Length: 221
Image (tube, rainbow, N blue to C red):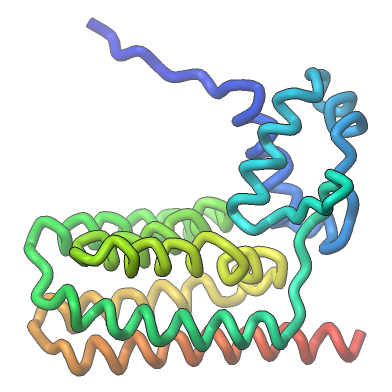
């Protein structure tokens, strides 16, 4: 019997279209996203557009004001550095707290790495962003502390993850990030927890370096 193929809802289609335009830079940070205009462009009602914008806000890609005006999210360098400080502490501690990881978890992470490489090869950076987030959530998934898992999910799904999208650094840094991810997993598989922690710390420092490079580039424009 053939498998049922799940069709995307109108809200999912709107979400993917808007997200793609944010990632590509077609929609700039701070640009307004009027529901009525988007609904007309997509040929749908405002309800699925509103649902899409709400979901994008949950991922940190869109900001919604008290007046219910949605705009593409923007971030200051200070905001980015504060989030990275928190993220580094959480990610490194999590490796120690979940060590040793069981084989099934590591196999799932390896599958994620394979998918990351495939996305890079296909030039699908929006897909890579999702896989990058999933990679870090998989590392945290076996942590028995639900509060810690929630915090790691927040810093990976919210403002910090959105910054990577909006800075347009991924086309240049995706392969570098993939290689950093691979070294972390290699260390975990070999039982070298201190090496894994060093690699994760280095990964976080490289993200900070890429962020600072973006802000420097923006200042010189």
